[in-house]
Image 1 (spheres, rainbow, N blue to C red):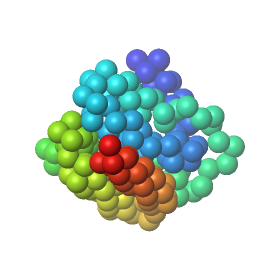
Image 2 (cartoon, rainbow, N blue to C red; image 1 turned 135 degrees about the horizontal axis):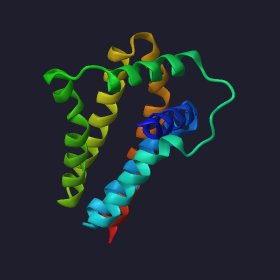
Image 3 (cartoon, one colour; image 1 turned 135 degrees about the vertical axis):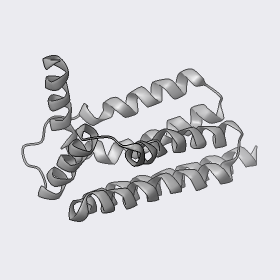
Image 4 (cartoon, one colour; image 1 turned 180 degrees about the horizontal axis):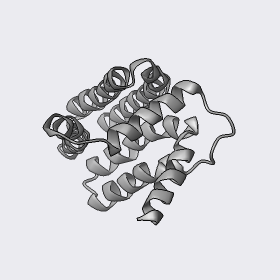
Length: 163
């Protein structure tokens, strides 16, 4: 059990590096691509990369107090007591990811874009609600990631429809 606690602490220290916050939304692009190509292997590899990306970067030397406060709230959320409401709320993550994969699997660009925007909006809203004032730290990485995802998916859509 000490190994898990040590690993969790090590990983979360690296998640304080804001670069991991900026790259995480970008994993939705290969996720959508592999869903569109109907590659379960690609989807699984992308999900593994997404889950591990929180500790790809070194532990930062300085941390924004809002980032530190928000991540402390996330730790409390994850390690705190779980009830039916928390389970239902947390189930939105796999449900929206499934909906995103399903939309692109079915080649529904419109619903795919709708779901990807819904994911970003829900993430920001949950962060602002659960994190009180610290949730503001999530807004810029989420919006920049969303703009990049929307742009690249729009370009991909135009290229596919042109063929």
